[in-house]
Image (cartoon, rainbow, N blue to C red):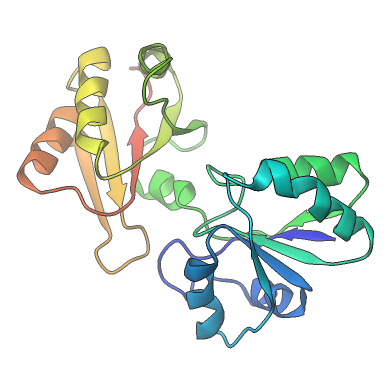
Length: 221
C-alpha cells in the first residue's frame, strides 16, 4: 500500500489524526526533504524510518520502491508541505503503483491552493490550477491563455519572481484584472492582498515579497 499523505503548509496543527496514524504505522516514509519532514515527525514523536524521494532522484528510485511495495511494505509519501503530486514529486510513483497493481490511497488534507482560492473573494465554483508557470519557454503563451480564461486561475509563485509575474500579467490582461495575492498561508504572517493587478503591484513594490505565494486571478470579464 502506498499512502499519499498531505502535511501542513504552515501551522503544524493542520494535519489529520489519520495522517498521524499512517505516518506512525508505515514501514517507510518517503520524504521530499528528510530535514524538513523530521521537524514534523519530532513534533508528533514519530520515529518511522525515512528515505529521500524528490524530483532529482524519483526517476531512478521509482521502480525499486514499487518492487518493495509489491513485496508487502507499506509506505507513506510526503512532500515538504501540502499534498504530494500537486507541484511536488508524487505523480510518477503513484502512476507506476497503479500500473503494477499496488493500491494507492491519498488522504484528504492540506494544500495551499484551496484556502487561497476560497478566501480570495473571487468565483471558486469553477477554477483552473496552473501550478508554477514556465520560466522561459512557453511562458508568454501560457500568460495569453490565462488572460482569456473564463474561470478563476490559481498559480504558485516564489517571492523572487512574484512581482515580475504580476507585472507580466498586467501587461497581458490589463492592470484592472481582479486578483488576490496570498502568502504564508496558515502561518503567523499570513496575508492576502485583494484588488486589481495594479493594486497588488503597488503593494509589493512598497513591501518586499517574502514567503510562498499563491496568486488567484479573476476570470476574463
